[in-house]
Length: 230
Ligand SMILES: C[S@@+](CC[C@H](N)C(=O)[O-])C[C@H]1O[C@@H](n2cnc3c(N)ncnc32)[C@H](O)[C@@H]1O
Image 1 (cartoon, rainbow, N blue to C red):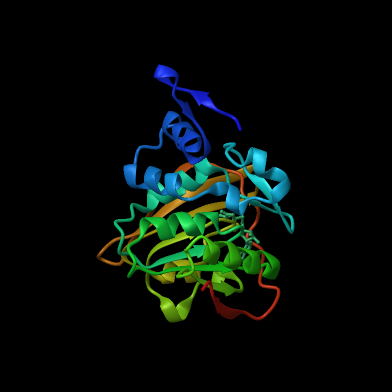
Image 2 (tube, protein in one colour):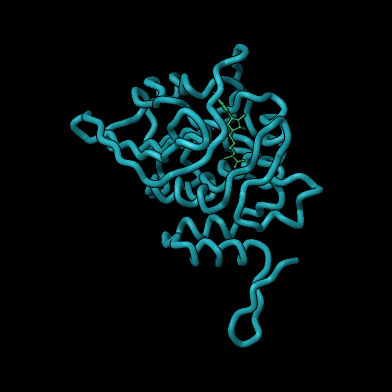
């Protein structure tokens, strides 16, 4: 396994190596860093890519999709400023890695809901999350652009695929004081990560965090149904 040598001959492996790289790239929130320390990225990566699971880059997870780059997962998580009691919605479950990071950050009473449009990915993520003890995440098959109206409003919404414009349903489902982090743009060469904030007055404000490259948020291709990650 790849290692970074520390002072006194100490070496870093596994999640510690990944966390060290995040710190070197400017991730500062200790709660976010602790969550990365606790969640084994290798468990969300296909067998043939295990040796690369600690690399700070996206990796293929099948179905034409990828597990996101850890630095981007960290930046999006930090932007939500979670305290531990929020109602959280994720769009684009993918491997379930980001879902696990969110579960790790939230208290046992807080709810993480995640929507994925590819059935195979959702089924695999549900198994991985349950095996690692994150089965309390509630998963749904469907089009995340529609949000999860029955469970709204949300204090935090994280979208891991890029629409051309922010889906109105997600803004409508954002609670006062809530935050939405979302990549937006017509294609991977022209996307920016946006942070939206609904003020207590109900007004919305937003700003751009950084340039990013995400897969597109695809349109609904079938009816949706719910399934628990338990
Ligand atoms: C970059 S991957 C997410 C990676 C995930 N954060 C992880 O840690 O593995 C984006 C995911 O969004 C999903 N997706 C794309 N369009 C969607 C939609 N309209 N609704 C729900 N999920 C969608 C893709 O199938 C893919 O799994």
